[in-house]
Each structure stands twice: as C-alpha cells, then as structure tokens.
Amino acid sequence: MPLNIPNLLTWFRIVMIPVFIALFYVSDETLNLHHKHLSSVALFVLAAITDWLDGYLARVMNQSSAFGAFLDPVADKLMVAAALIMLVKLGDVDATIAFIIIGREIAISALREWMAQLGKSKSIAVSVLGKVKTTFQMIAIPFLLYREPLFGLPIFQLGTLLIYVAALLTLWSMIYYLMLAMPQITQKSRE
Image (cartoon, rainbow, N blue to C red; front, side, top):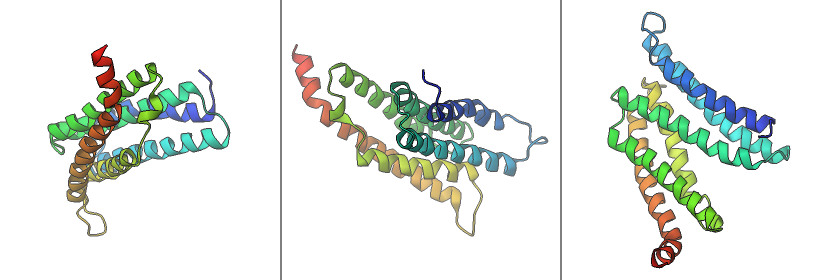
C-alpha cells in the first residue's frame, strides 16, 4: 500500500466514520442537538471534500495506485452507509430508502468485481447517471443531517425530497449497469 497524500486522505475519511457515528451517542448535555446536527454535517461535508480532493491530487501529483482505486470507493460507500443508517435510527429516513441505496452499492460493487475477473470491467465503468445519483445523495444527506431551516429554506424537507430522487436514480442506475452486464451474465449462465 503506497502511503501518499491521496491514500492518506482516503484513510482519514475511513477514520472519520466512527467519529461521525459517535456524535449521535454523545449526551445532549455534552453536545446539544443543534451542535450534533452541525458537527455531523461538517464531518460529512469534509468527507465529501476529501473524496474529491484525493482523486484530484492522485491525478495532478501522478500518485494513482491500484490500492487507492480500490479503497476510495469503499470509503465513500462506508460513509454514505453510516450516514443513512444513523438517519434511519433517528427516524429521518425510511429504512426502505436506505436499503435501496446501500443494497445497490453492494450489488454493483459485486458486479464490478465479477466483471473485472472476466476482464470486462470497462464495460460497466462509472456512468453520468451514477455521478448524478451520487450528487443527489451527497446533497440530500447533509440536508437531512442538518434538519433545521436555513435562510428560510426547509432544508429537512428538501433533503427528504432529494433522498427519494436519489433512491429512484439508484434503482435506475442499477438497472442500467445490469443491462450493460447482461451479455456477460447470459453468456456465463449458458456455460
């Protein structure tokens, strides 16, 4: 595992996950609800920024590595899963929505692994649809975590709407990736 700045940022994101979760278990006397919301949003947004930054630095500094390419999406999925599970626990996101998003990530990761073993990983590379889905998720989750109106905008309600849109895009992108892989799936099922 090469220890370079992009990989260290990815590890930092993974280390932030238990800190993010622990925020919700701190007593209200130690950290009031407003500060819990604010802190959780700050950590989640910091994770999103480091996700963009580690990819950017890997390209600019020519420090891309196979390990970094593996670990980066794992860190992203773990942070999103942790946030969704906490939001379900708080009653702010329906468990079905969290299951759709987390389940899709597991299914598509497995599909990509299988396609890589077949030497066909480029046929299901990340699409624009996947990036749009991720954008909706990464906006919805901080809105749901923050909960409070901001500049007169109903942030929580907007977050709820966006997470439902993200779930629909999640299903759509999963179907899209499965359709791309279908020739390989049908061929292997005949063997």
